[in-house]
Length: 261
Length: 261
Image (cartoon, rainbow over all chains, first blue to last red; front, side, top):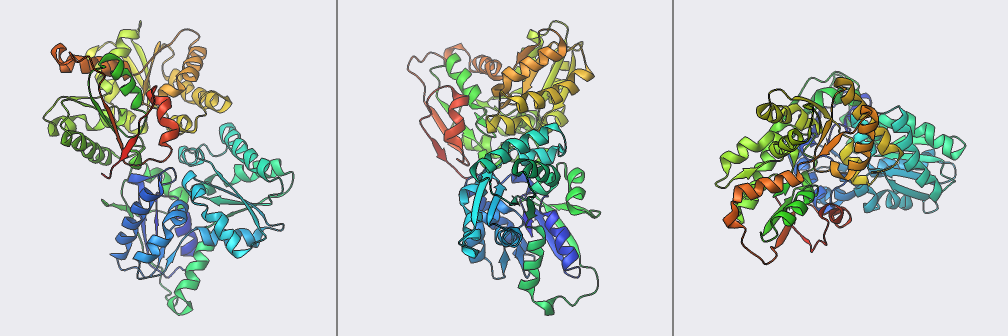
């Protein structure tokens, strides 16, 4: 699995609960994060380098935890990989369609993911009657990284973005957190969404859906190991890693190895 | 001149007023921005690549607009360059010392610049009696990029950071904007600083001081041209460039050429 940073560790967390016997190799491309405000060509180039790093370690499945990389680079990554590749967008879209009652789905994500149109396409391909509305929220990533996740500023930023979303479609009953950083802001986003909608709004993210997609891709016979799988973590930059990684992973972190890409 | 993004165009703007006859080559490393939250080793590696790109174009002087790159990589850049190299930190420190009346100087900057201790060292080397206080403000860069520069959220974020700064030293009379993005937030930062201090606070940035340092480095005989100099801009990524660059540059932008580094 690779991600532009540590956010993908929320997916590792889900994966290790679903497939505890599998070995996981995680690469966080912190040196070049965030991917979310970069041009498609750049995101694709970086994503291919990350995948090649994993393929050189003989992985049998590639998971793209980063929504931006999934939204933009999935076709190029699939073309370059001899093993199956699972992105974050399709599982996220499927989760949203399972959760919605009226088909009105809001997607919040990075600028690059929004521009790709990937979520709207993935939702439309599964249910042509569904109505997705997508909004880029560039301030949410630094807010999550700063740890300002449940205070006046977080609430104001969430309100400013989500008000724009609900202005475009007041009937939204399901909100997709289309970026691996956003689960850290789940509480404030959920609260503000419910206030603005005046009713319950389902909050979904890709993490558990990606873990289920991994089970399908590997097939049941692959998952017979009873010993706990290894978790090997690599990063292109280690600044603040010790501080933020455990919050995302939900288990003690045994260390990252620094690599140049 | 190079920068991690477009913020350095504020320095280009100052430079073209001070030295209108000189040709300027500008490189913005947007693909890998922000530098401010990355490890020193990564910032140094990227800075050296940027400088080499400029040296390959036979520049006679290198200006590091990015405060983070200046704070961390100046010694490595000087060692690798056959021409003079001017960073942002020393001119910024000199400007602050010229502006302060009581020697109490506040510096706001990125995480990486704060950790380098470069501003405190540069101020201390020029005036051992001065008292610098440095604070990292990671949310200011995305706030400036989002264009939320004069509203409730900008004021709250400015207040939260500057309150921390004035708690550490209530006598601060001069505030250094130690990042090329921060001049876009100059008004709100200045207003909040004055409110918190209960008196005037001088706001200084490196842009004009760097232009003056360039005049000194080039010598008066170099500046005899009367025709307007060329401005050639290069970038490693062009996402949002059209949108944000003119605000920083203060003149029409004739285009950026995309390069891989």
